[in-house]
Image 1: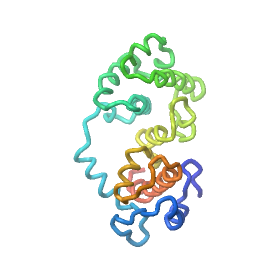
Image 2 (image 1 turned 45 degrees about the vertical axis):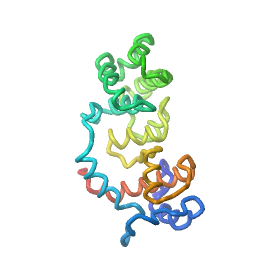
Image 3 (image 1 turned 30 degrees about the vertical axis):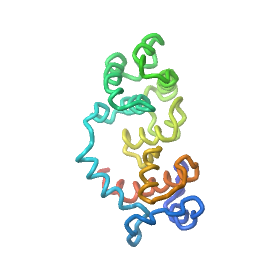
Image 4 (image 1 turned 60 degrees about the horizontal axis):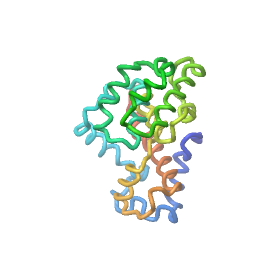
Length: 219
């Protein structure tokens, strides 16, 4: 069935791959040739996942898949260096260990915990979202992509990251880093801020995850 959240079905992905020459003229031109019934770039998981297992950094927000922890880390990491976030993440969770604590926190405490990270709208949106979770979702972080996406301060990338990390859902998290890597693999000059490019790859990655990764995960 069509995927309402992420734009492209597997069939549409293949159709776009054949017909989107004006948007992505060199898609996978310089990559390994696709095998029969293989999606464009479908070989990436078998290359990237072993590399990640070997080289991944030991980060505190990777210790568990608690949605609150994943959400907090993703918001803190927006436009902020990983090393700068480590200490803030630990202090924030020590002071506000649950979503309910966050929803009930005094603004003065929130600003103190966030002081130095900048972009204070992020922490204000965290509290707004926490209250929505408490009062509209009975205190349980929503699992549905669109419901997560509707929370204040959460965009398509962050929603995709939360749902994929916390809930093992095939929701792509496509940001500038992903698009830069793919552009270099394909020697593609298409600007990475082109909305059509981002939408295409979000749909393509969704299909790749569904076909090559989700089927191998324990149910």
